[in-house]
Length: 274
Image (cartoon, rainbow, N blue to C red; front, side, top):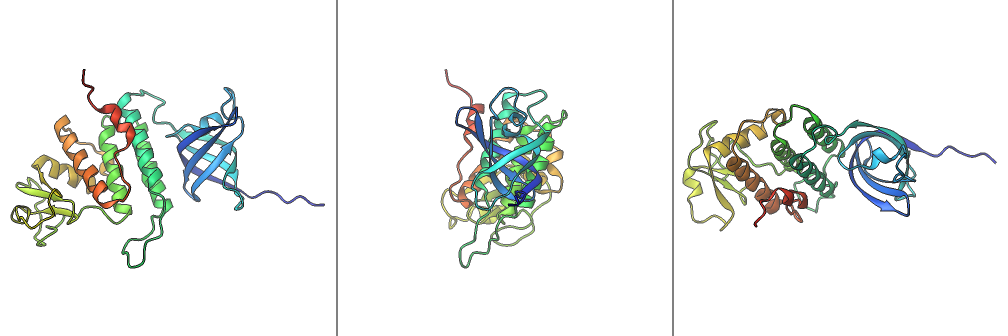
């Protein structure tokens, strides 16, 4: 009787979540470069000296080998190594919160089958992995001084992958060209899916509560986020500007992505009342 070798896969992966399983094992959820979302079981990974223990820590970019049996919902994790760990050097509450918030968002952006008549296309897992890889690389850099900006860049890329990124080139209502700098009197329109010029923004016929005034600094920040390689070039901005940009992006995600909610990890950064 011959024994056929079990199919396996070797690929890069981002650890999204992990759970204890039994007394010493762990289950982990991966976003992989070549196989999309995969759940693995790591036998005895919670033992202190287990070689699998580093491969189930959320937020790490790893290279792994696991079984690839289509009959199993949980694949067996075999071996691997850690490529990047954003919290290995100079860990901080801010960096941890934005990393965990990003993992929560990515875990919800699973590939989907569009409904009949929908113009949206399924999310490409390989492209989603590339976006996550860039985010983890920036967050792992010793020069990363603005993890919030890297997180906002990830949010923008997730909107882009879903075909929902705000249109900044022209007014979403009248089609007039938008200014490249010093935009005054502009509005951020959730329902229209972009930015409105001063005249269209003051039109009372718009959806109530779905328009927000857009400051000149926030306008510049959004244009940087939308540009190529922007996640690697954080501008110097104030805490007030970061709050404004974050509120705009969270509002847009909440309006256009069903089931979206503010990542729970970001509550760690809220000021505490005495």
